[in-house]
Length: 509
Image 1 (cartoon, one colour):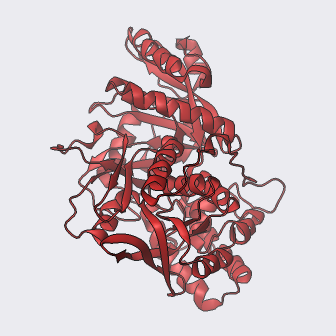
Image 2: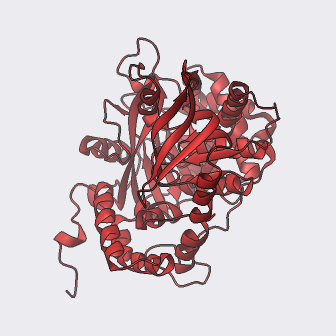
C-alpha cells in the first residue's frame, strides 16, 4: 500500500465511486474488502490510522463469546464461532488456536462449566478447534504453574482463538487495496454532500497536508464505531443517539505471571464480569472492565479504579499476584454498543449484535458487533449498500479470501530495542508498504511496542522518528512534532505511578 498513490486515486476518481466507507476500523475495512472484491468501485476514509480506535484495543480474542451463552444469545455465539473458524482458516499467520483454563475453586464448577463449554463446542460444529476436557488439580497446576493452589479442585479446558488485532486490520486494508479499493488513513470526513435531499458524497480533509478532498458516490456507509452518531448528525442534526459506549481496559504484565501458553478465563467475578489472563507476544494481557458513562474519544484513558479492579480480581487467582509496579502498559478501548430502547446504565447486559440503519437521506450506518464477526457484518452491509445504490447484485467472496501477513519480529535482523520483539526491518516495511505515516502508527499498531511496554516504547521512539524521517523525506521539525505528539499519546499507557522519561533522570545522564 502506498498512501500517495491511493490518495491520488481518490482525487482523480472523485466522481466515480460506487461505495464510500467512512471509518477504517475492523467493520469499515471489512466492508471495503467485501465491496471491492465484488467489483464495486470502493473508497474508504479513516480520520486517524487504520484500527487506531477500538479495533486495536481489544482483548486479542477471536471467539464465540462464552458469556453470551449465559444470556441466552445462542444465535450470536453460533455466528461468532463460524466466523472464528473462517479466520483461523483464512488468516493462519495472524490468528491461532489457544487453550483456556477455567479454574474450579468449588467442587461443582468443573461439571457446571464443562456442560456450558461442551455446548460451546457443539455450536462450532465442523469449524470447532478441540474438545472441552476436565483437568484435576495437578493437571491444572501443570498447565498454569502460577495458578493459586489453595482451594483448587481442578479446571475445565476449552479452546478459542487469539490474534493481533492491529496487524489483522492492516492485513484487511492491504487486501482491500489489492482488490482495487482506495483506502486512505489520516483523512477526515468533515461533511456530507447532499443533492435533492439525498446523500451523494463526502467532503474530507487530509490530516497530514490540510488538502481538501471531494468525493461523490452512489452510497455512503458510516462505519465509524463510537463516532457513528457524530457522522449521522452531519446528515440530520437532530438524529437520536443509537450508540451507548462502554469502556474496557487491559493491563500488560511480564509473561511469567502465567508461565504458560494457556490462558485463564474467569466466567464470573463479583459483579458478573468475565475476566481473562492471556499470553500475548511473550507478555500477559489481563482484562477487561465494563465502565459506562465515559466520554467518546479516539484515545480513551484507563481510570484508576478500573486498574485496581483488574489487579484485585486477578490477584485472587494467581499465586504471585500482580501489583501496580508490575504493569508494563495499560490500554483502554470503547465498545460501540447499539443502544436498546429504554436501556439502563448497565452496559454489560447490552447485546453485541450489530444493526444497520438507513436515514431518510440515504446515509447507511452499521453499528454494534465485535471483531470476530467483522466479515459477516461486512457481508450484510455490502448487500444492503448495493441494494440502496442500485448496484448489480454480486455474491460475497470474503469467506475464501486469504488474509496474509509477512509478520513482524526479529528473524535475525537488528532489533529496535533490547526488550522489544521487533526489528528495523519491521519499521521500514511499515513505512514503505503499510502506510505508517506517524511514529504512533509504527510504535502502536505496525509493531505493538507501546502496548507491550510503554517505557521501552518511549525510549526507542526518537530512533524510530529519525528512521521514518529518512524514509519519508522529513526534517528536524517533523521529528520534533512527532515526538511531542507521541509523548502525549504514550502518557495514556503509563500506569498511574509511572514517570515519563522527561520527568525522571535516566541512568548515566
